[in-house]
Image 1 (cartoon, rainbow, N blue to C red):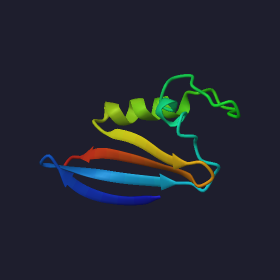
Image 2: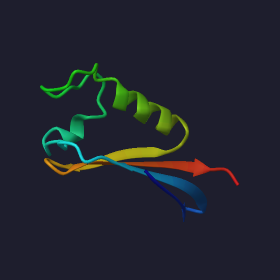
Image 3: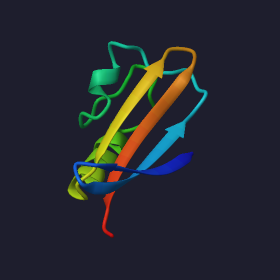
Image 4: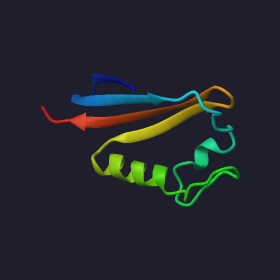
Length: 84
């Protein structure tokens, strides 16, 4: 995990980047991963983890996104505002 702070729109943000080296996410699935109950065929989860994460991050005025390449892992980007 990497952490940094940035300024944008006159505000300070904490940027968190979490990377893995797993199997990655197929491009056609990536736009769906933050939808409730969405699961890939090989998933053993409930399809709620990432939607809950998105809800919590957005409730705090932040944003969350993912980028991935099959066979190369996934990177999650989380940006949260910081009160000074």
